Structure formats: structure tokens, C-alpha cells
Image (cartoon, rainbow, N blue to C red; front, side, top):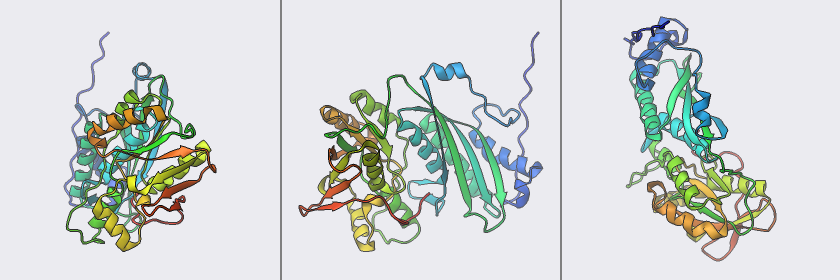
Length: 354
């Protein structure tokens, strides 16, 4: 017996310029919003009936790895659009990278949005299209989601929550507690660009040179690193709290001390300059395309060479080492020859980006 597939359904359309509370009410207005903005952007084939869940073939997942990786993150940023990206691009790449730093191949994303009443439909559509483009670039599919609308003043224009699913191939076992004394600490490029881009977009800085966010998907770079340096211990993405926070987490979890060198820490001169003017520490500035890697001594050179051959690792540097000192202690050797403690971020570091 042949079962006929249902015909593609006709998508609803929006005919108003801004989001209203009716678009969150569960009726036709909500259906039209989802169809016109999100289904139109995210659908990879003819639109079918919307289910309450995505359905993923388990056999296909098992063919690609022996463990499931699963992560979720929420994104809040002001302004929504900034040099080098927007909140939608940030949400996709941020979640892809959270999977990738565990050695996973990112496959699927969900997208839940909380929209403030009054948000312009054109802006919302632009963000959805940016998410779709970012997903295509990262090779992932946005397969399910949710939409809520709240009254004016109840949120800051738009909040996005993305959840990611991926698979970890057999033989890959990255762990934050795996670092050993002597391991090299590497980063894949210039630090703090994302935090600087957000500050500039808010008008807080008068920079002659526009700094763009480093927002990028890093799973391709990570695959390259693991191929060249299969003994890699740990990979972490340095987002909120910057590399200072990540280094403290790594040192504490592994029971080692870490020392980095100021002279080896890659910073754009514009970033270094405005941090000095504003009294900010660039080690705490947010990144959205930077990772911190711990590699065994024998594989440091191979890892660096491989990173520098990749577009997202061209400015990769060895910035320090782990050693058998006080567990959890992170220090920096300054350009003046002294040392200073690099603490975990305490309180709020501006700008707040997510």
C-alpha cells in the first residue's frame, strides 16, 4: 500500500511593519510570523506541517560518532547588529563552537526567540536570514524552535536561545581536567575583537579603524588541530570573561598552575590602546572566534603550524605553559619582567555581550 505524502502547505504572510502581542497569541498572527520570518529562512525543502519536535534518525547519528554532544546557550546583545555580525550569527556560531570544543561534529540546532512587542519585522527577518546563512556556512540545520512575544519593556528587543546537537567521533576525548605540567597553552589569534566591536557599535569609542567581531564557526579549525596534534588535552572557547576566565577554569579543573607571557599574547593595537584609555583588561574582553588550547609539549609545534595554515588560526600563538605549581593559580609574566596574578573575573566586565 502506497501512502501519499501531504502536499506542501501554503505559508502565511505578515502585512504589518512591527511585532504585536497578537504574534505571540498562538493564532493566525503567530502562524504568519513563524512562516514568513522563520520557516522561510530556515526551511531546506518544501515546507511541511509543523510538528512539535524535530525527528532525527539515530542510525545516521551513530554512523558519525559514538557519543552524543548536546549544549544550549542564550544570547543577549546590544546593539543587535554590530561590525562583523549580529545576534543571529552570534547565536548560531556560539552554539556550534560549544559543540566543537568538545571534539563534536555539529549537526542540528534549535532556535527559541523571545521578541519584544514593537520590534520591526524587517529587522527580525534580517536576523533570521543571518541565522540561516550562518547555519549553511557551519554545515548545520536549524530543525525546530519556539517563538514568544512579550510586552514593551519586558525584554531588550530580542533574546535568542539555541540548542545544539552533535556527535563525537570515537577516539576523541577532550576534557578540561586533562592538562598536565609542561603542556603548552595556545590561542588561535587576536584577542578581544568582539568586545571591542560591541563597544564601538554602541558609540562608546571613537575609533579611526573599524574593528569587526571575530564571530566565526571553529569546528573546521578544531578538526585541523586534532589531526595535527591528536594528543590535544583541552579546547575551550574564550567568550564571556575572556581568556582570563577560561585559563582559571582550566587550571582549577586540572589541578595545575598556568603562566602566560604578556609579550606573546596577541592583541590588536587599537584594542590594546582603548583598554588602556578605559581602564579595561583585554584578558577579560569577550571573544566569539577564539579558543584556548592545551597541547602536550611534543605536539606544540605541529599544532601551531596547523593552526597558522587555517584562515581562523593565522595569528595563532603559544602564550604560556602549565606547570606543577599551586593548583588553579594563573599568572602573567609582564613585559617589564615582573609577574601578576590573573584572577577569575569578579563582578561585571563591560561590555556585557551575552
